[in-house]
Length: 154
Image 1 (tube, helix red, strand yellow):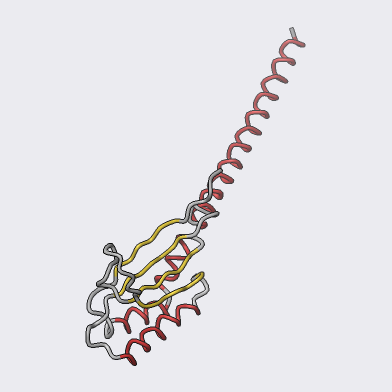
Image 2: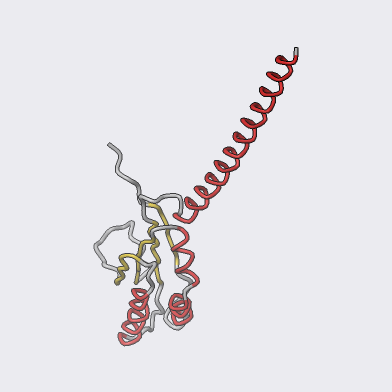
């Protein structure tokens, strides 16, 4: 009987020890999962894809060539923002397409590696300065279009 009680005590202790180890592993795994979720959010949830940000500008009709050039120089400053990838910009090209957005004389486009990078760009001093300077060149608020590039599927 004494051996049976001893054996039961050993089984209970072993079971408790295993249970504590399982709880510890569960806690560690839960922490790892939480970190992985934070990492995914930081990457913008699409690590293989780029967020493309396009902006269309309607310029004031009486804008001089010098003012137009000055606005382009303001846009060019966005190259200095490290989050901005592949900034391109230019004036509307009339190609006779009836679907063209004729009311917008200027457009710019850039990419971001994540939504976080895009949000940092939005709050960057150079971008905010451009938004303020643009008021003297624009006939109305800019129009934007944002999209995630898609990974090629086989």
